[in-house]
Image (tube, rainbow, N blue to C red; front, side):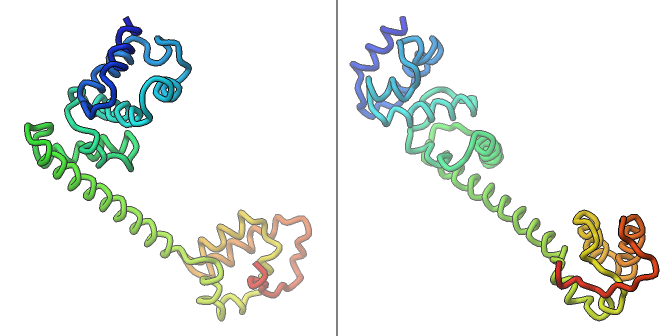
Length: 211
């Protein structure tokens, strides 16, 4: 049966009849795909039997099945709007498009316009999230920036930051940005009590510039 399908696809040739090609590929896939006709991959099948462009039809078939629409609903060109997105993103874009109109309709040109608008809306939402993350990152100043802003207060303390373990220094900088110099220094001083080489009566000068 699969061999008959293969023969039918050979006879059809690549004549821009995407609907027929895609339907046959779908039938072949249901019957075991490339393995059912003795190949180890779709790539080997297409390169030996048909044309490299059949990969596009296979991808379009995958997208149509992903969106739960009939095989051959849209042309390869129509579905290029999804080419830059993965399957999860395609489903989200399709969901946005469905809110703008009932898809698929009898007007593929209008459908494509709606899908493009939905993809642009999705990209815009991603950019908005990226900008929000950037703002959050900016709100947590880098250690060097923190030290600059609080240099006067911090330099007046007797604290050797170079002796602190990395995880303690990270928490120190976090407290410095979120609370105050006093709170951060108090935390660091408490942690230093547990250091093996800590000498309570020794005065340490701030060496934050070395970190």
